[in-house]
Length: 397
Ligand SMILES: Cc1cc2nc3c(=O)[nH]c(=O)nc-3n(C[C@H](O)[C@H](O)[C@H](O)COP(=O)(O)OP(=O)(O)OC[C@H]3O[C@@H](n4cnc5c(N)ncnc54)[C@H](O)[C@@H]3O)c2cc1C
Image 1 (cartoon, rainbow, N blue to C red):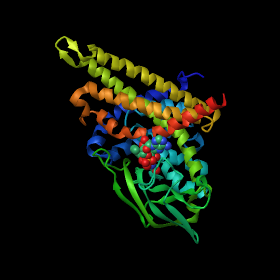
Image 2: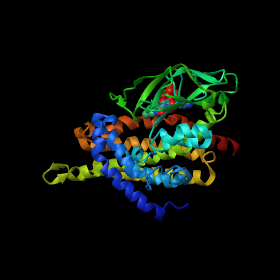
Image 3: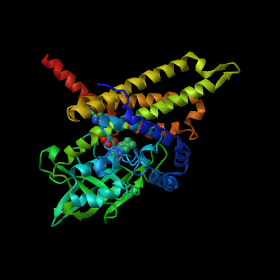
Image 4: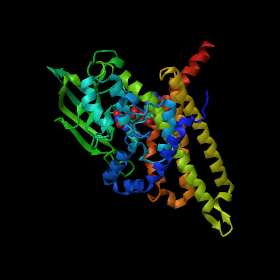
Protein backbone atom coordinates (compact mmCIF):
# COMPACT_ATOMS: atom_id res chain seq x y z
CA UNK A 1 0.00 0.00 0.00
CA UNK A 2 1.20 3.48 -0.84
CA UNK A 3 -0.12 6.52 1.00
CA UNK A 4 1.70 9.14 -1.05
CA UNK A 5 -0.84 11.63 -2.31
CA UNK A 6 -1.58 10.79 -5.97
CA UNK A 7 -0.07 13.63 -8.08
CA UNK A 8 -3.35 14.13 -9.97
CA UNK A 9 -5.04 14.95 -6.66
CA UNK A 10 -2.61 17.70 -5.70
CA UNK A 11 -4.27 20.60 -7.62
CA UNK A 12 -7.62 19.58 -6.10
CA UNK A 13 -6.17 19.57 -2.59
CA UNK A 14 -4.58 22.95 -3.20
CA UNK A 15 -7.90 24.38 -4.41
CA UNK A 16 -9.60 22.94 -1.31
CA UNK A 17 -6.93 24.57 0.86
CA UNK A 18 -7.66 27.99 -0.69
CA UNK A 19 -11.37 27.42 -0.26
CA UNK A 20 -11.24 26.67 3.48
CA UNK A 21 -9.06 29.72 4.08
CA UNK A 22 -11.63 31.84 2.25
CA UNK A 23 -14.35 30.31 4.43
CA UNK A 24 -12.87 31.55 7.72
CA UNK A 25 -14.81 34.86 7.91
CA UNK A 26 -18.02 33.06 6.94
CA UNK A 27 -17.57 30.35 9.55
CA UNK A 28 -17.23 33.04 12.22
CA UNK A 29 -20.54 34.54 11.06
CA UNK A 30 -22.16 31.10 10.99
CA UNK A 31 -21.00 30.44 14.55
CA UNK A 32 -22.33 33.77 15.84
CA UNK A 33 -25.39 34.41 13.64
CA UNK A 34 -26.40 30.92 12.51
CA UNK A 35 -26.57 28.96 9.29
CA UNK A 36 -29.39 30.91 7.63
CA UNK A 37 -27.43 34.16 8.04
CA UNK A 38 -24.66 32.80 5.82
CA UNK A 39 -26.74 30.62 3.51
CA UNK A 40 -26.88 33.19 0.66
CA UNK A 41 -23.08 33.54 0.73
CA UNK A 42 -22.70 29.76 0.80
CA UNK A 43 -25.06 29.49 -2.15
CA UNK A 44 -22.90 31.91 -4.14
CA UNK A 45 -19.81 29.85 -3.30
CA UNK A 46 -21.58 26.68 -4.38
CA UNK A 47 -22.36 28.29 -7.73
CA UNK A 48 -18.66 29.03 -8.09
CA UNK A 49 -17.71 25.44 -7.28
CA UNK A 50 -20.35 23.74 -9.41
CA UNK A 51 -18.66 21.72 -12.15
CA UNK A 52 -15.16 22.26 -10.72
CA UNK A 53 -12.99 19.38 -9.37
CA UNK A 54 -14.29 20.10 -5.85
CA UNK A 55 -18.00 19.65 -6.63
CA UNK A 56 -19.61 16.36 -5.50
CA UNK A 57 -16.23 14.61 -5.10
CA UNK A 58 -17.74 11.32 -3.86
CA UNK A 59 -20.31 10.93 -6.64
CA UNK A 60 -19.56 9.00 -9.87
CA UNK A 61 -18.66 11.13 -12.89
CA UNK A 62 -21.70 9.77 -14.77
CA UNK A 63 -23.92 11.40 -12.15
CA UNK A 64 -22.18 14.76 -12.23
CA UNK A 65 -19.51 14.15 -9.60
CA UNK A 66 -15.77 13.58 -9.53
CA UNK A 67 -15.77 9.80 -9.03
CA UNK A 68 -13.02 9.83 -6.42
CA UNK A 69 -12.10 6.56 -4.71
CA UNK A 70 -12.70 6.27 -0.95
CA UNK A 71 -8.99 6.92 -0.34
CA UNK A 72 -8.88 9.97 -2.66
CA UNK A 73 -12.05 11.40 -1.17
CA UNK A 74 -10.59 10.81 2.28
CA UNK A 75 -7.56 12.93 1.42
CA UNK A 76 -9.78 15.71 0.08
CA UNK A 77 -12.03 15.47 3.13
CA UNK A 78 -9.04 16.05 5.37
CA UNK A 79 -8.56 19.47 3.78
CA UNK A 80 -12.25 20.38 3.56
CA UNK A 81 -12.69 19.34 7.20
CA UNK A 82 -10.54 22.21 8.40
CA UNK A 83 -13.64 24.38 8.21
CA UNK A 84 -17.11 23.49 9.57
CA UNK A 85 -18.44 24.72 6.20
CA UNK A 86 -15.93 23.04 3.84
CA UNK A 87 -18.00 20.00 2.95
CA UNK A 88 -21.19 21.98 2.62
CA UNK A 89 -19.91 24.24 -0.14
CA UNK A 90 -18.56 21.22 -2.06
CA UNK A 91 -21.97 19.49 -1.66
CA UNK A 92 -20.48 16.46 0.09
CA UNK A 93 -21.79 17.20 3.58
CA UNK A 94 -23.39 14.79 6.01
CA UNK A 95 -26.14 13.65 6.01
CA UNK A 96 -26.77 14.47 2.33
CA UNK A 97 -23.67 12.67 1.07
CA UNK A 98 -24.79 9.37 2.61
CA UNK A 99 -28.36 9.88 1.39
CA UNK A 100 -27.08 10.54 -2.13
CA UNK A 101 -25.11 7.30 -2.04
CA UNK A 102 -28.13 5.31 -0.85
CA UNK A 103 -30.40 6.83 -3.51
CA UNK A 104 -27.83 6.16 -6.21
CA UNK A 105 -27.45 2.55 -5.15
CA UNK A 106 -30.99 1.61 -4.18
CA UNK A 107 -33.33 4.30 -5.57
CA UNK A 108 -35.79 3.63 -8.40
CA UNK A 109 -35.60 5.87 -11.48
CA UNK A 110 -38.64 7.81 -10.25
CA UNK A 111 -37.07 8.26 -6.79
CA UNK A 112 -33.85 9.47 -8.37
CA UNK A 113 -35.76 12.04 -10.43
CA UNK A 114 -37.77 13.34 -7.50
CA UNK A 115 -35.32 13.14 -4.61
CA UNK A 116 -31.76 12.61 -5.86
CA UNK A 117 -31.43 15.02 -8.76
CA UNK A 118 -32.30 18.20 -6.79
CA UNK A 119 -29.93 17.01 -4.05
CA UNK A 120 -27.05 16.51 -6.49
CA UNK A 121 -27.80 19.91 -7.99
CA UNK A 122 -27.52 21.48 -4.53
CA UNK A 123 -31.09 22.75 -4.76
CA UNK A 124 -32.38 20.79 -1.77
CA UNK A 125 -31.15 19.26 1.46
CA UNK A 126 -32.19 16.04 3.18
CA UNK A 127 -32.01 14.26 6.52
CA UNK A 128 -31.85 10.73 7.88
CA UNK A 129 -34.19 9.63 10.66
CA UNK A 130 -33.15 6.46 12.41
CA UNK A 131 -32.43 7.29 16.07
CA UNK A 132 -35.36 7.60 18.47
CA UNK A 133 -35.58 9.20 21.91
CA UNK A 134 -37.35 6.16 23.36
CA UNK A 135 -34.99 3.44 22.17
CA UNK A 136 -31.20 2.91 22.45
CA UNK A 137 -29.72 4.09 19.17
CA UNK A 138 -26.83 1.68 19.71
CA UNK A 139 -29.24 -1.13 18.88
CA UNK A 140 -30.60 0.02 15.52
CA UNK A 141 -32.65 -3.14 14.96
CA UNK A 142 -34.99 -2.22 17.84
CA UNK A 143 -37.15 0.68 16.68
CA UNK A 144 -40.56 1.98 17.71
CA UNK A 145 -41.47 3.88 14.54
CA UNK A 146 -43.91 1.84 12.47
CA UNK A 147 -44.95 2.01 8.83
CA UNK A 148 -48.11 0.16 7.89
CA UNK A 149 -49.29 -0.44 4.35
CA UNK A 150 -52.78 0.98 3.80
CA UNK A 151 -53.92 0.49 0.20
CA UNK A 152 -51.27 2.17 -1.94
CA UNK A 153 -49.75 4.20 0.88
CA UNK A 154 -47.40 3.71 3.82
CA UNK A 155 -48.70 5.25 7.04
CA UNK A 156 -45.93 6.19 9.46
CA UNK A 157 -46.13 6.84 13.20
CA UNK A 158 -43.24 7.47 15.54
CA UNK A 159 -40.71 9.93 16.89
CA UNK A 160 -37.11 10.50 15.80
CA UNK A 161 -34.40 12.67 17.23
CA UNK A 162 -30.92 13.86 16.40
CA UNK A 163 -32.20 14.05 12.85
CA UNK A 164 -29.32 16.18 11.62
CA UNK A 165 -30.26 19.08 9.32
CA UNK A 166 -34.02 18.33 9.36
CA UNK A 167 -34.54 22.11 9.65
CA UNK A 168 -34.97 23.17 6.01
CA UNK A 169 -34.62 19.64 4.56
CA UNK A 170 -36.89 18.69 1.65
CA UNK A 171 -37.18 15.05 2.68
CA UNK A 172 -36.19 12.55 5.30
CA UNK A 173 -35.12 8.95 4.80
CA UNK A 174 -37.03 7.37 7.67
CA UNK A 175 -36.17 3.98 9.15
CA UNK A 176 -39.43 2.36 10.21
CA UNK A 177 -40.56 -1.12 11.20
CA UNK A 178 -42.58 -2.56 8.32
CA UNK A 179 -42.32 -6.25 9.28
CA UNK A 180 -42.51 -6.60 13.08
CA UNK A 181 -42.63 -10.42 12.97
CA UNK A 182 -39.52 -10.87 10.78
CA UNK A 183 -36.09 -11.67 12.29
CA UNK A 184 -34.69 -8.51 13.99
CA UNK A 185 -32.34 -7.51 11.15
CA UNK A 186 -35.17 -7.70 8.59
CA UNK A 187 -37.89 -5.76 10.41
CA UNK A 188 -37.16 -2.21 9.27
CA UNK A 189 -37.31 -0.54 5.87
CA UNK A 190 -36.23 2.86 4.57
CA UNK A 191 -39.02 5.13 3.39
CA UNK A 192 -38.71 8.49 1.66
CA UNK A 193 -40.84 11.06 3.46
CA UNK A 194 -41.20 14.65 2.16
CA UNK A 195 -40.94 16.99 5.14
CA UNK A 196 -44.08 18.83 4.02
CA UNK A 197 -46.18 15.64 4.22
CA UNK A 198 -49.10 16.22 6.65
CA UNK A 199 -48.24 14.76 10.07
CA UNK A 200 -44.45 15.16 9.68
CA UNK A 201 -43.48 17.79 12.23
CA UNK A 202 -40.12 19.18 13.29
CA UNK A 203 -40.74 19.71 17.00
CA UNK A 204 -37.50 21.55 17.81
CA UNK A 205 -33.85 21.90 17.11
CA UNK A 206 -32.17 20.22 20.07
CA UNK A 207 -29.77 22.49 21.98
CA UNK A 208 -26.25 21.05 22.02
CA UNK A 209 -24.41 22.38 25.07
CA UNK A 210 -26.45 25.57 24.92
CA UNK A 211 -26.69 25.97 21.14
CA UNK A 212 -29.73 24.80 19.15
CA UNK A 213 -28.31 25.95 15.81
CA UNK A 214 -30.43 26.26 12.68
CA UNK A 215 -30.74 24.91 9.16
CA UNK A 216 -28.02 22.51 8.12
CA UNK A 217 -26.18 23.21 11.39
CA UNK A 218 -28.78 21.69 13.70
CA UNK A 219 -30.17 18.40 14.97
CA UNK A 220 -33.94 18.09 15.26
CA UNK A 221 -36.55 16.14 17.13
CA UNK A 222 -39.23 15.06 14.69
CA UNK A 223 -42.66 13.50 15.15
CA UNK A 224 -44.58 11.46 12.60
CA UNK A 225 -48.32 11.12 13.14
CA UNK A 226 -50.30 9.25 10.52
CA UNK A 227 -47.92 10.43 7.77
CA UNK A 228 -49.09 8.99 4.43
CA UNK A 229 -46.63 8.57 1.58
CA UNK A 230 -47.03 6.57 -1.64
CA UNK A 231 -46.17 2.87 -1.50
CA UNK A 232 -43.46 3.56 -4.08
CA UNK A 233 -41.53 5.68 -1.58
CA UNK A 234 -40.06 2.48 -0.16
CA UNK A 235 -36.30 2.85 -0.71
CA UNK A 236 -34.63 -0.46 -1.57
CA UNK A 237 -36.21 -3.77 -0.70
CA UNK A 238 -38.75 -4.14 2.09
CA UNK A 239 -37.05 -5.29 5.31
CA UNK A 240 -33.60 -4.26 4.07
CA UNK A 241 -33.38 -0.99 6.03
CA UNK A 242 -30.72 -2.28 8.40
CA UNK A 243 -28.42 -3.70 5.72
CA UNK A 244 -28.73 -0.51 3.63
CA UNK A 245 -27.91 1.58 6.70
CA UNK A 246 -24.80 -0.54 7.30
CA UNK A 247 -23.67 -0.03 3.69
CA UNK A 248 -24.27 3.73 4.10
CA UNK A 249 -22.10 3.93 7.19
CA UNK A 250 -18.92 2.13 5.93
CA UNK A 251 -17.35 4.75 3.63
CA UNK A 252 -19.15 7.43 5.69
CA UNK A 253 -16.94 6.61 8.66
CA UNK A 254 -13.81 7.19 6.57
CA UNK A 255 -15.17 10.60 5.61
CA UNK A 256 -15.97 11.52 9.21
CA UNK A 257 -12.56 10.32 10.44
CA UNK A 258 -10.62 12.20 7.76
CA UNK A 259 -12.71 15.30 8.48
CA UNK A 260 -11.66 14.91 12.13
CA UNK A 261 -7.99 14.67 11.06
CA UNK A 262 -8.49 17.97 9.20
CA UNK A 263 -9.90 19.54 12.37
CA UNK A 264 -6.95 18.12 14.36
CA UNK A 265 -4.45 19.63 11.95
CA UNK A 266 -6.05 23.04 12.20
CA UNK A 267 -6.25 22.83 16.01
CA UNK A 268 -2.58 21.79 16.18
CA UNK A 269 -1.55 24.69 13.96
CA UNK A 270 -3.51 27.09 16.16
CA UNK A 271 -1.95 25.55 19.25
CA UNK A 272 1.58 25.88 17.86
CA UNK A 273 1.02 29.47 16.65
CA UNK A 274 -0.32 30.50 20.04
CA UNK A 275 2.44 28.68 21.94
CA UNK A 276 5.10 30.37 19.81
CA UNK A 277 3.64 33.88 20.12
CA UNK A 278 2.09 34.07 23.59
CA UNK A 279 4.74 35.52 25.89
CA UNK A 280 4.87 34.40 29.52
CA UNK A 281 7.62 36.91 30.20
CA UNK A 282 9.25 39.45 27.84
CA UNK A 283 11.78 36.74 26.90
CA UNK A 284 9.91 33.45 27.13
CA UNK A 285 7.01 32.11 25.09
CA UNK A 286 4.50 29.51 26.20
CA UNK A 287 6.00 26.97 23.79
CA UNK A 288 9.27 27.03 25.72
CA UNK A 289 7.56 25.38 28.67
CA UNK A 290 8.14 21.66 28.47
CA UNK A 291 4.53 20.69 29.21
CA UNK A 292 3.26 22.74 26.26
CA UNK A 293 6.04 21.61 23.93
CA UNK A 294 5.28 17.98 24.79
CA UNK A 295 1.57 18.46 24.09
CA UNK A 296 2.49 19.74 20.65
CA UNK A 297 4.76 16.77 19.99
CA UNK A 298 2.25 14.24 21.34
CA UNK A 299 -0.64 15.71 19.35
CA UNK A 300 1.46 15.71 16.21
CA UNK A 301 2.35 12.00 16.65
CA UNK A 302 -1.22 11.02 17.54
CA UNK A 303 -2.63 12.82 14.50
CA UNK A 304 -0.13 11.06 12.21
CA UNK A 305 -0.97 7.67 13.75
CA UNK A 306 -4.72 8.25 13.39
CA UNK A 307 -4.29 9.50 9.83
CA UNK A 308 -2.35 6.41 8.74
CA UNK A 309 -4.89 4.12 10.36
CA UNK A 310 -7.76 5.89 8.57
CA UNK A 311 -5.95 5.87 5.21
CA UNK A 312 -5.26 2.15 5.65
CA UNK A 313 -8.98 1.54 6.28
CA UNK A 314 -9.90 3.66 3.23
CA UNK A 315 -7.42 1.74 1.07
CA UNK A 316 -8.86 -1.55 2.37
CA UNK A 317 -12.41 -0.49 1.45
CA UNK A 318 -11.21 0.33 -2.08
CA UNK A 319 -9.40 -3.02 -2.30
CA UNK A 320 -11.69 -5.52 -0.55
CA UNK A 321 -14.94 -3.67 0.16
CA UNK A 322 -16.49 -2.23 3.34
CA UNK A 323 -17.69 -5.57 4.70
CA UNK A 324 -14.25 -7.19 4.68
CA UNK A 325 -12.71 -3.99 6.09
CA UNK A 326 -15.17 -3.89 9.00
CA UNK A 327 -12.56 -4.46 11.72
CA UNK A 328 -10.42 -1.57 10.49
CA UNK A 329 -13.47 0.69 10.13
CA UNK A 330 -14.38 0.04 13.77
CA UNK A 331 -10.79 0.70 14.89
CA UNK A 332 -10.59 4.11 13.23
CA UNK A 333 -13.97 5.20 14.57
CA UNK A 334 -12.93 5.06 18.23
CA UNK A 335 -9.23 5.78 17.77
CA UNK A 336 -9.67 8.89 15.61
CA UNK A 337 -12.50 10.36 17.71
CA UNK A 338 -10.38 9.94 20.83
CA UNK A 339 -7.44 11.73 19.19
CA UNK A 340 -9.81 14.45 17.97
CA UNK A 341 -11.14 15.18 21.45
CA UNK A 342 -7.64 15.17 22.99
CA UNK A 343 -6.21 17.52 20.36
CA UNK A 344 -9.09 20.02 20.57
CA UNK A 345 -8.92 19.97 24.37
CA UNK A 346 -5.17 20.64 24.41
CA UNK A 347 -5.49 23.39 21.80
CA UNK A 348 -8.09 25.06 24.03
CA UNK A 349 -5.85 24.67 27.07
CA UNK A 350 -2.92 26.33 25.33
CA UNK A 351 -5.16 29.31 24.43
CA UNK A 352 -6.20 29.71 28.08
CA UNK A 353 -9.47 31.61 28.59
CA UNK A 354 -9.49 32.66 24.94
CA UNK A 355 -9.78 28.97 24.03
CA UNK A 356 -13.27 28.61 25.47
CA UNK A 357 -14.63 31.79 23.91
CA UNK A 358 -16.55 31.81 20.65
CA UNK A 359 -13.93 34.20 19.22
CA UNK A 360 -12.11 31.08 18.03
CA UNK A 361 -13.45 28.10 16.12
CA UNK A 362 -12.01 25.76 18.78
CA UNK A 363 -14.99 26.09 21.13
CA UNK A 364 -17.37 25.31 18.25
CA UNK A 365 -15.36 22.19 17.43
CA UNK A 366 -15.34 21.21 21.11
CA UNK A 367 -19.12 21.59 21.41
CA UNK A 368 -20.08 19.93 18.18
CA UNK A 369 -17.45 17.23 17.82
CA UNK A 370 -18.04 15.78 21.28
CA UNK A 371 -20.73 13.85 19.47
CA UNK A 372 -18.02 12.10 17.41
CA UNK A 373 -17.65 9.54 20.19
CA UNK A 374 -21.39 8.84 20.05
CA UNK A 375 -22.70 9.03 16.48
CA UNK A 376 -22.08 6.37 13.82
CA UNK A 377 -21.97 3.88 16.67
CA UNK A 378 -20.65 4.83 20.14
CA UNK A 379 -16.95 4.10 20.67
CA UNK A 380 -17.74 1.27 23.09
CA UNK A 381 -19.73 -0.63 20.44
CA UNK A 382 -16.82 -0.41 17.99
CA UNK A 383 -14.34 -1.51 20.66
CA UNK A 384 -16.54 -4.56 21.31
CA UNK A 385 -16.55 -5.38 17.57
CA UNK A 386 -12.76 -5.25 17.44
CA UNK A 387 -12.24 -7.18 20.67
CA UNK A 388 -14.78 -9.87 19.71
CA UNK A 389 -12.76 -10.83 16.64
CA UNK A 390 -9.45 -10.86 18.52
CA UNK A 391 -10.91 -12.94 21.36
CA UNK A 392 -12.48 -15.37 18.89
CA UNK A 393 -9.10 -15.91 17.25
CA UNK A 394 -7.48 -16.35 20.67
CA UNK A 395 -10.04 -19.00 21.61
CA UNK A 396 -9.40 -20.87 18.37
CA UNK A 397 -5.61 -20.74 18.71
C1 LIG B 1 -24.08 15.07 16.59
C2 LIG B 1 -24.96 13.89 16.34
C3 LIG B 1 -25.61 13.77 15.11
C4 LIG B 1 -26.46 12.69 14.88
N1 LIG B 1 -27.14 12.60 13.67
C5 LIG B 1 -28.03 11.61 13.48
C6 LIG B 1 -28.82 11.56 12.28
O1 LIG B 1 -28.70 12.41 11.38
N2 LIG B 1 -29.75 10.57 12.17
C7 LIG B 1 -29.93 9.62 13.13
O2 LIG B 1 -30.77 8.74 12.94
N3 LIG B 1 -29.18 9.64 14.27
C8 LIG B 1 -28.26 10.61 14.48
N4 LIG B 1 -27.54 10.67 15.66
C9 LIG B 1 -27.82 9.70 16.71
C10 LIG B 1 -26.73 8.66 16.91
O3 LIG B 1 -26.71 7.77 15.85
C11 LIG B 1 -27.01 7.99 18.28
O4 LIG B 1 -26.85 8.97 19.28
C12 LIG B 1 -26.12 6.78 18.52
O5 LIG B 1 -26.47 5.71 17.70
C13 LIG B 1 -26.20 6.32 20.00
O6 LIG B 1 -27.53 6.10 20.36
P1 LIG B 1 -28.11 6.77 21.71
O7 LIG B 1 -27.81 8.22 21.69
O8 LIG B 1 -29.53 6.36 21.81
O9 LIG B 1 -27.27 6.15 22.89
P2 LIG B 1 -27.56 4.77 23.65
O10 LIG B 1 -27.77 3.67 22.66
O11 LIG B 1 -28.59 5.00 24.68
O12 LIG B 1 -26.16 4.50 24.35
C14 LIG B 1 -25.69 5.35 25.41
C15 LIG B 1 -24.26 5.03 25.73
O13 LIG B 1 -24.18 3.70 26.19
C16 LIG B 1 -22.94 3.12 25.82
N5 LIG B 1 -23.21 1.90 25.06
C17 LIG B 1 -24.18 1.71 24.13
N6 LIG B 1 -24.12 0.47 23.62
C18 LIG B 1 -23.10 -0.16 24.25
C19 LIG B 1 -22.52 -1.45 24.16
N7 LIG B 1 -22.99 -2.37 23.28
N8 LIG B 1 -21.47 -1.73 24.98
C20 LIG B 1 -20.98 -0.82 25.85
N9 LIG B 1 -21.50 0.43 25.95
C21 LIG B 1 -22.52 0.75 25.18
C22 LIG B 1 -22.20 4.16 24.97
O14 LIG B 1 -21.26 4.84 25.77
C23 LIG B 1 -23.30 5.10 24.54
O15 LIG B 1 -22.82 6.42 24.31
C24 LIG B 1 -26.66 11.73 15.89
C25 LIG B 1 -25.99 11.85 17.12
C26 LIG B 1 -25.16 12.91 17.36
C27 LIG B 1 -24.49 13.03 18.69
